[in-house]
Image (cartoon, rainbow, N blue to C red; front, side, top):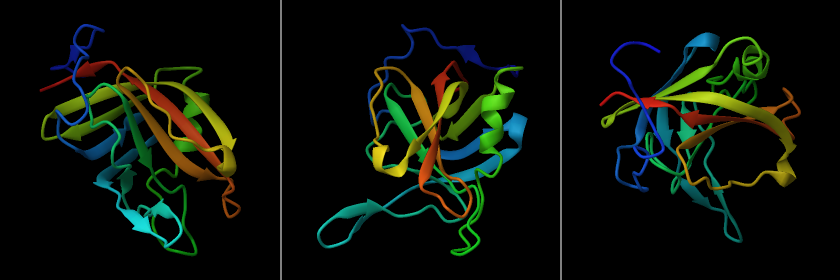
Length: 167
């Protein structure tokens, strides 16, 4: 852990939703991810609603926790986007499950409130029809990307838990 961080205990992590600033940057040093984070908009499709797709950024789902807060933060990014040309912010994300077998993988979210490292705890792949946003009582982030390339009918979910803060 770089200097200047304080480890978070279960007693520290009592910040409710909406008390801290939106994340503005994400970094995953072990796989070379560095990206701006932008709050996604909800699109009205007439008979349904959907989230806009993140273009060249990592998208934060509205209504989910901000960096450092209790609850679940949901962040979406592309592995690749050859047809729509929307970037590849999470290009190396599929590497994280193999890396956590050897060394911890940390995800750092930065906001005006501070920097908040999360440690990757798990990953899984689900079919797009079984993809649901779920809540957590503690500070958790879930990184989401469409897989496999070009087919994109499944979602890679990488979950990490808040471990420290620098404010």
